[in-house]
Picture (cartoon, rainbow, N blue to C red):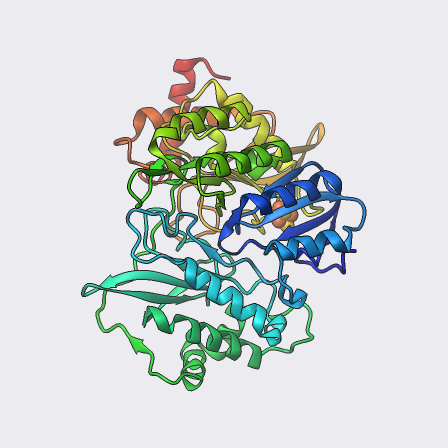
Length: 489
Ligand code: SF4
């Protein structure tokens, strides 16, 4: 049976939601094999809604569970390597890494062994069950598909200094939703695990283990001061931490959906295919189909991405076209022009009482509307959030839509505050563009995307960069002018 409820669900820590119980399965690094996929699909069919959701930490979530999952079934998942034998640590946040670790043609280091080592360490040390369930760790290997801008408490970002690869250590100490900040500590790769263990130990020394909710790492760092926190870390280490002397700032690399589509791997003649999942959801029939393709053509491996998509890896060049058409036969595709590739929505009204709008429903309506109206040549990240908490995506989007309900003469109207680009004052959502009702949203976004396509400097300019070149009033003028020319409402 499911063993209990907490705010952050794990495989053994299910949580109630409006549509039933939600069970989240930790997949360290987002990497799973075809057997694990089949077992999860079976549970989703038997106990859940017949689908699984990929989360923004590359976990899998089964929803609409209305009865307890049999202990034998959970045991079988553990035997397949899913979930920890030490269930007390199962709720800790999934360990994040680039979904292309080990296959990325430009990465500096394969981060998979670090993910595995930290996962083993968590499982072997039950005192870590006192960590906040939100204690989040990320390893970025310095490749094309970067995860260093994802929101995590601790980030190890690979950098090359004088021909040697190190990890730069970044720690969250700012406001909620802000990426971790560079500490200027440069770590030889093999020192990363002892430092991580010391960081966790200092955190545990400064929290009340039974308090609910637990302090976040950034709160402990802020209470102590970052320098003092790092001094306590140093006291627990048998070697001296070295700080980078140069003045150069750590350049955070922005992820931009390089994983969607067909890409060569660092291994000659092998390719990976980034498959778009609309709002991270995949039917069990589709996940079973992808598992079969992974076995038939690849190495049996599937990788979940923090952008809620999925990769099929290790596909020999001669089979790429066949795999692509078999993916299409499953009702999925690998196209960067698919508007769904950059669309993100939180649970919204259907799964969260705090939501002002049906974010997922509105996002799907938008995708359907844009499907045959706007053809993109690279993904535009459009983020629907039902309230200011912004659970589904803490990092900046190209376009953010914040759900609100307002009163007018006809009663309550649902709509969105639209934000674009990045705000100079570093506001969470970017620069406010306007309010739009749910009904008028699709046409407004269509107009913005059409203007972006015709007015951008070149094909490499992202929507965010494009929007940042203009004052909001200028952007509106461009859209209004275009609306008249194209006869849009
Ligand atoms: S962002 Fe707000 S509305 Fe959406 S899931 Fe989180 S708390 Fe709920």
